Picture 1 (tube, helix red, strand yellow):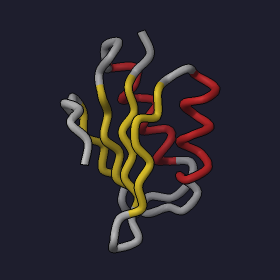
Picture 2: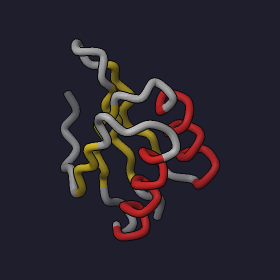
Picture 3: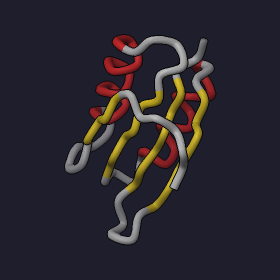
Length: 80
C-alpha cells in the first residue's frame, strides 16, 4: 500500500483498449496538478499503455500493481 491521498478513482474493469486510456485522459484533464488518480483495470494492455501514457505526457506513475485476482491497479500523479 502507499500513503498517497487519492483524489480521483477510475474503475475501468471490463473495458478493453483503448477505453481505459481514453477515460484516464478525460480524468487527467479534470484533475489539478498534483492530484493522484487511482485506476483499476482488467485489460492486460494497460500494463503497456498506462506507463507509456505517463512517460509521453509527463505524469508520474507512482504505483503499478498486479492484484491477487489478476486485475491491475495504478496510481498516477498529474504533472505540475
